[in-house]
Image (cartoon, rainbow, N blue to C red; front, side, top):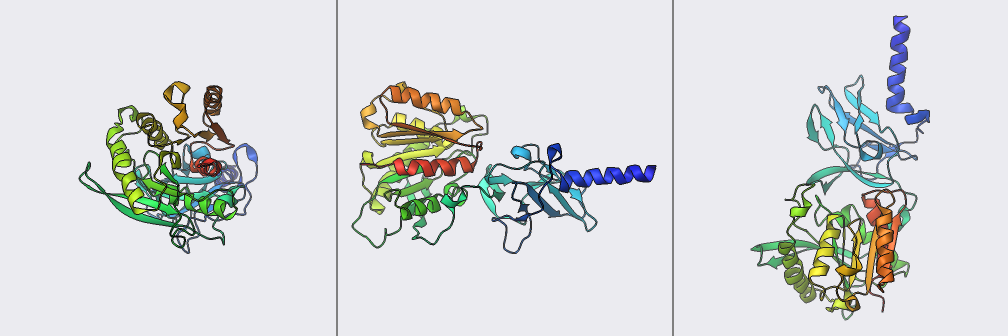
Amino acid sequence: MKRNFLATALLIALSATFGFAQGGAEIKEDFKPSSLNQPGQEYPQVNSQGYARFRIIAPAADSVRVSLGLGGRGGTKLAKAADGSWMGTTAGPMDEGFHYYNVNIDGGKFNDPGTLSFYGSIRWESGIEIPAHDQDFYALKDVPHGHVQQVLFPSPSTNTSRRAFVYTPPGYFESTKTRYPVLYLQHGWGEDETAWSNQGRANLIMDNLIAAGKIKPFIIVMTYGMTNDVKMGGLRNFDIKPFQTVLVDELIPYVDKTFRTIAKPEKRAMAGLSMGGMETKTITMNRPEVFSHYGLLSGGIYAPADIKDKTKVKLVFLSCGSKERPDGVKNAAKALKDAGFNVVSYISEGTAHEFQTWRRSLYQMAPLLFKD
């Protein structure tokens, strides 16, 4: 009797870890290594349903948990195997796209040695990619590619040189007389100027749109928003003035001098995700003479009263995931449209406050920018 009970308990434990999802649905055993794994590493893995499976080598550990769980919350407890490794599968499928995660071993926080690291949550964290049904628009394809280059620009206000990454479209270096509009694109809280290229695939999105003839080429500039000294939940204490000075008075003149830009407000846009959206809204309201195209990607909304002179604004783009607050975005867009603004709203279906929402948002916004 005792033996049968133990066997049944073991079967239930293994089924919860490897074989069955919540509600009893069977998990398909078609797992493959994540596309973001280190070279030659088999784990983490993802399957066709969006489940993630992890294997951590920690033979002396007493407990191992991965921060990534069902819906990105709660985490995934791993079970120890006979060889000293720990394995486990998320309790449910993850949203499509990119996710940060870390590994907790006996209370300590570590990165998964099986996968690449990405700067988020104020640290370099492990990343995993859940294949998306619409991943073609940011896939690496055999098309002409632009360049993403690091630049160091002087910043007298901070008494140092600061870093930015600049995307120049295909043909930039060959057609030396052509000048381009510029989008200043900001990351979110806890991230830095590498996020839009590494996690967001912004350069590949642009390459594919240009190759398909869906947009006129433009430059993208990505720099650090000086946000990570503000703790999560304390964003109301963030002072925009230092970053506004760096962006408007230092970076933009440097870009206009160094690159072949069209240095006019009507050919200059600013957009950002999450806290980068808050920065975008604040700076465009404070300095309405600088930009003419505004984009808030899961980064708040504009009310008609926020924009004093609508003749200076060529486009307002508002977006979020369907798991965020889509009604707020839709209602704000309607109010702006009723007030006479050129406004477009976009809701990313099936995603939350995450990079798949923002990849899709950039894909939708880019063709709308700098139309004559």
